[in-house]
Length: 412
Ligand SMILES: [Zn+2]
Image (tube, rainbow, N blue to C red; front, side):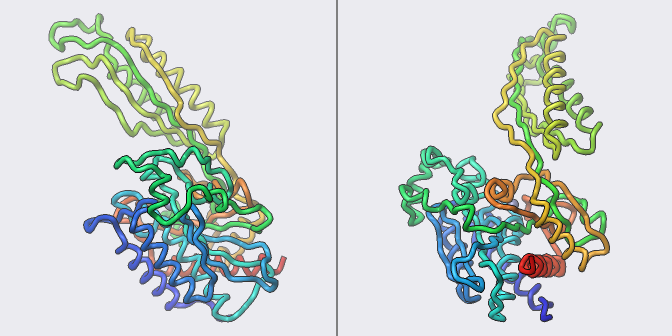
């Protein structure tokens, strides 16, 4: 069998370099939803898709989709891909790698005129990161029909509504619902993505199979105490909110360290008035807890709330805890994952199963169609950063795994 070779790896890296150049800033990579750069990226990907012999369509949210028909026209499709938007000061692999690996896999069949019992589709989702409108998975949610039209009223940092941004992008927001696909249109979804963590590198493996996408809870904590002079208020009379926050943060670290299936982060803290000689009378901080186990996550959140309330009460501080976000964990499809693992076994000394701590389009697609995810080793586990890096050979292995997975699915 004629499997991808060095050329495939080179083409993959060249295309990634082309997309890296399409940025809103000359200094770093940033490509937000429905911008002129999103338009250029979609047009570039569409050009590659057409050259590969795919029929190309862009839906009303701005997902770019290329299709290669199966043995029979209009057969349900295996969709593959990832997102084309990026964070600010992004790396060039997050999202794009998944779109271009999918394209390379379909090119393999298209080049040979080899039709499968299902159609193949490559998708570049319009928005996964949510940088412009602070709402994630716009592209995949439009496909599953879970994108609320009320989202169109969201306003970006420059005061442009999502509705107007879509019009400027050449879309008709009134037709947004047409982006929705029927579950019967799809046989499954597969996403290749950089790992964004250190496991594969540590295990010296190029790729691994994702077991589940972690559930997450975010808390917003406000502590109200009393500001006072740092020199004149005795320690036992203070209502120091920053001390209550500090004790809470240490408790969060302790609780999440106690279980390898938990991660907990306080990524932001603000103390008011924020002067070196004033007791902080008001402190706010965020909490982000994730786990592949919903039970463990919910238990940890209960425990964390309890610790925050205690740390506050023991200082006469009032605590207010809000929960702006909670998402359950979701398992990848067992069949697709098993078949993908068999293909991984052909190229790796062992099959590494990894839960994803980060959210991905696959989480949205799982609500509609059996979906699986393949992680590719990335250097130092670094992502959302210009230093994001993979080996070309690892990308080529991901493409091989996709091709072999499709071949195995075709035999079912
Ligand atoms: Zn991503």
